[in-house]
Image 1 (spheres, rainbow, N blue to C red):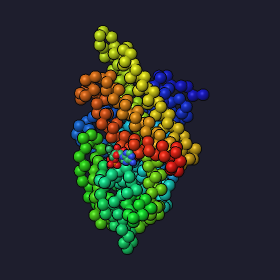
Image 2 (image 1 turned 180 degrees about the horizontal axis):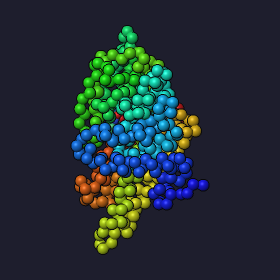
Image 3 (image 1 turned 120 degrees about the vertical axis):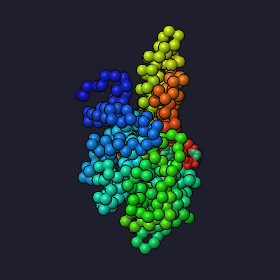
Image 4 (image 1 turned 180 degrees about the vertical axis):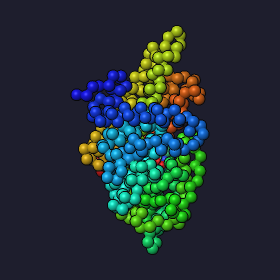
Length: 396
Ligand SMILES: Cc1cc2nc3c(=O)[nH]c(=O)nc-3n(C[C@H](O)[C@H](O)[C@H](O)COP(=O)(O)OP(=O)(O)OC[C@H]3O[C@@H](n4cnc5c(N)ncnc54)[C@H](O)[C@@H]3O)c2cc1C
């Protein structure tokens, strides 16, 4: 049996992984702390998209963990993919977002629903880091109720014209592939939804506008406008009008990777609090010796582990071949959202006033953790989906 790792933190994250998965965790953690973490604050201050950091990912195969080897990827299993997302997000939400948008939403959908030509066209470039992906789903009228989208795809000779706007689109200005959902018939609601693989650089009628954010300025979130943008027939992913199952499957995997990233954030909040609680003194002793601070450490530890267990359990279900695990995806996303936000709040309390100074990282994590609670389904949506499934009002 492989030796257990020594520290309690390592044991929590590591208990029943295979030796290969442990090695991935060790390698990715060391890479993230060495190559990414020292630069994150600077990129955020400068509001600069971290292209240089993203460029370091392909060397370790980190841009293709959901892409089969035959298309240049490094796919091994879902749990390993979750570990990669967790460890990169533990140091940077945005770099991890590139991995998860590219793999869960885009490459995963192409692998499952794409034609051979679509796989050949996109997958090797994504894995190699030549193509950054954006998912164009959310609209100004609302992101939760995706079946009610207003962006249209009108059939014309040889393809479709896209008309409408998307907001909150991460990576948009740097993307070489847009995964777009639009309706070919608004009256049919979700049965009109169609998925497209759009090359924004080769398509006229697409404009990318600023979407000013109070946080995550380095994420390059943008508005994307389609004005009679012509896309050929071969850009349809799956069937015309068959985009809702494509989207559902993409979001299912997306929720797994976002939840993994939130576990990374929750872990980071705890990791930052531990040395501070041991070193900071009040009333002549380390604050970590006060029971009220110990309570926070215990709560943070239990929360992150509960979320991690839910996320790895979901990964194992996917590895066992259960492709759609919607309720478990919702549970993982909900628990991981709660763990990330509450752990950051508790960790900030440990830091006291210093949590909101530029000297410490923890304050930056607050809005980032909250922002992640909205992506890939809000907590309210997941609460609703879990209850509806349990009550038999919705199919798995
Ligand atoms: C940092 C960040 C990055 C993002 N990146 C992307 C991206 O790359 N691509 C993309 O397409 N989108 C992206 N999004 C958008 C995100 O997916 C949406 O914000 C999310 O889907 C919620 O949509 P909304 O903000 O329009 O809220 P709304 O849908 O307007 O919801 C507002 C509130 O009402 C609640 N609500 C809605 N319906 C119900 C209900 N039935 N019952 C109870 N409560 C309900 C919601 O939970 C929420 O609290 C990103 C968002 C953020 C913050």
